[in-house]
Amino acid sequence: MTETKPKTAKPGAAPKPRPVVRLQEGSTIKDLAERLKIRPKDFIDKMSGKGYALGPSDPVTETLAAALAKDLAAVLEIVPIEEALRREAESQTAALTARPPIVTIMGHVDHGKTTLLDAIRESRLVDKESGGITQHIGAYRVTFNKRTITFIDTPGHEAFTQLRARGAKVTDIVVLVIAADEGIMPQTREAINHAKAAGVPLLIAINKIDKPEANADQVKRELQKDGILVEEWGGATISVELSAKEKKNISEVLEMILLLTDVLEPKANPKVPAQGVVLEARLDTKKGPLATVIVQNGTLRTGDAFLSGATFGKVRALSDEGGALLKAAGPSTPVEVLGYAAVPQAGDLFQVLDGVETARAIAERRTAPRTAKADPAKQAPMTLDDLFRKVEGGEAKELALIVKADVQGSVEVLAGLLPSLSTDKVQVKIVHGATGPINESDVLLASSTKAIILGYNVKPLPRIEDLAARESVEIRTYKIIYQIGDDLKKAIAGMLEPVIKETFLGRALVRKIFRIPKVGTIAGCYVQEGKISRNADIRVVRGGTVVHRGRIGSLKHVKENVTEAKSGYECGLGLANFKDVQEGDLIEAYLTEKVSA
Image (cartoon, rainbow, N blue to C red):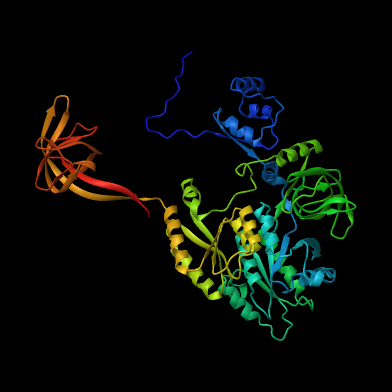
C-alpha cells in the first residue's frame, strides 16, 4: 500500500480556516464526539490527557466550547435550541401551510388606535382602559370573509421595538393610524421609523375623516416628505380613509390587510413542537406566573413542557383573549399560558421541548453568569470609537444615526448634512430624526438598529442614560452643529481602509557594478533627479518594468557613509536582499505612509 504524504501549504499561503461545528444548545460530550466522528471514549481520553475531566453526558456549554476549541481542529458554535428547532421547522417546506397574518396597530397617542381595534372587534375595549389609553399589550383575533386576522394592540412603538430588540420578529403588517385632523405627529414619525427599521410593510389608516377639519390629502403630503408615497398618488403603500368612531370603511381596512397577506403569503409548520414569542407576562396573586404567548410555528397543547428564555414550565391551561379554555393553539394564535415556574420577560422566545427536565436543565444553565460575548440575544450597537475595529472584522460599513434636536429646523439641517458625508464605501443612514429630549424609544430603537444617538441642544434624563448604559447604546450630545459633522468625518475616515500615500524622492542611473568580497554587490550610480535617501524605499526599474522593491542596505559617496545623495552627484548603493542589479537599471527612491482616506 502506497503511503500518501500530507500536502503542505505553499509558502506565503493563507492558513486554511478551521471548520465550524455547530451544536444545538443542550448537546452533550457524546453528541460532540459523534459530530467530530470520534468514539466518545476516545474523545474523553484525548481531552483527559489535556487536563479536561469530562463525562459523556456532560453538557457542552459555551464556556466549555470556547475552551475545547483551542485544542481541536474546529471552531465550536452553540446554537440556541429555539433557533435550531426553528430552522428545522422551516426546512420542512412540504409541511408549511398558510397561517393568519399578525398585525400590529401603531401611531400617535389619541389618534384612534384602540378605537379602530374596538370598531373591528365590535367590542368596548376603550371603556376598559384608564383614560382611554392602552395600558398593556393585547392580542386579539377577528374573522373577516371567513379568514382570521390576529391583531396586536401595543402601548406604543417602544414595546414593538423592544420585542424586536430581543430577537422576536412577530409582526407581518403594521397598520399606522394617523388622525386626519392632526396629521403626522412626533410619535407617528417614530412609529414609521420603527416599522421601516423592522422591514415590516405599512398600511396607512387615515382616521377621523368625519371631523370638519379633517384633511386626508394633507396627511398624504406629509407622508410623502417622510418617503412614503400612497398608492393613489403612484406609490406602493396602501392607504385607507376611515372613521373608527362612526365605523366607516372598517371593512376596507380588513380587505386591504387580507390583500397584503396574499402578497406576503405568511406560512408556518403546524406539525412541529410549538414555537412562539412572549408578548406580555405578569404574576397573578391566585394563579401564579402567566404569560401571553403568540404561537408562530407548531401547535401548543395542554401538558406540553416548554422553555421560555431563562425559565421553563409545563402547560397547565391555555385560554384565549376572551378567557375561554383551549386544548390546543396553532400558528398565529395568541393564548394565555398557565404553568410557568417564574415570570418570563416580554420578547422571550417560547419553545416546546420533549420533557420538563430538559427544559429545566437548559433554563438553569441560562441563569448562570455569562459574558456579553456568549449571550446570543445581546449584540451591542456601534460606538464612534469602535467603528474602525468592527470594519476591520469585515462587518458592513454603514453608520446608523438617530438625531434629536431642540427645534425642527435643526433636525432638518442635520438630516440633510449628515447623509451627505457618505462615501462610496461608507453610508451614513438616518434611522430617525425628531425634536425633543432623548427618550426611551430612541434608546430602544438604537439598540435594535445598532445606531448612535446624536443630540443637538438636548440631553437625556439620568434614567435614560442608565437605560442606554444597559443597552450599550452610545449617546453623544453637542452644542455646536459643525462639531457633529467633524466627529462623523473622523469616524468615517476610520471606517475606510487607510490610503497608502507614496512620495517620490529621486532617481539614480546604475553606471557600473562592483563585486566586493565580504561586502557584496555595489551599484555605482549617478543621481539624475531629486535625491536618494538612506531610509527610503526603492524600486529597481529595468526596461520600464519594476524588477525589485526593497530597501537600501548601504549608501556611500566616495568612501564615506552618507544619509543622502543629491541630484548631480555619484554614489555607491548596496541593495538589501537583491544582487541582480545591472548596468542601465534605474533606482527610484520614495517614502510610503498610511493616511486616512
